[in-house]
Image (spheres, helix red, strand yellow):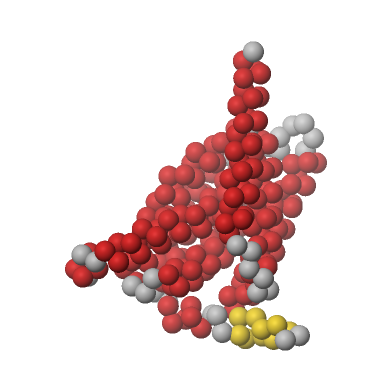
Length: 239
């Protein structure tokens, strides 16, 4: 352990992996912000806390099962000369779930007309949100941890990076969720991001890798344009 603390290579690996885990956590934060917008604020805060706690637990649990994770990348199914591992199957299922969930929410927003849909209340709605968050946490955690294994070999470094990334996700989730709730047009943009991320996950499952840099650049550029729109609307309302 002391060797890791005094090793420049270990610190470099920690900083690099932490930055990567934070970037990969953007998907998680966007999904959390969208899905909790459909329940009352008090329940939404609690759902965010539970969702991010589960994200941390799943990531550390998967890191402790390194041998099992490596086995998930071995082919278990072949269809027309295309081999699928359990990781591929989970990514495809998770991507399809994201696409279906985002499409359903887009349809709900469009069909609502000029009035925003009223938040669903009650234990049923709360536990449905927790269930959806749990499914996506598993998918994103799997993708995140397999990436971490490819970048670092020391378990303490990987766990430290994951913990720091989850703390950053927790700090960012509140402001992002409030911004989405206060500006309905940003929710539609976030739903479009989820469709894009879902397509990328499905493509990964079918061995067609879309570089994440392109996706995150598109998200950042669109978010910047929407921020200018929000500022413009605010200035017009003041005038």
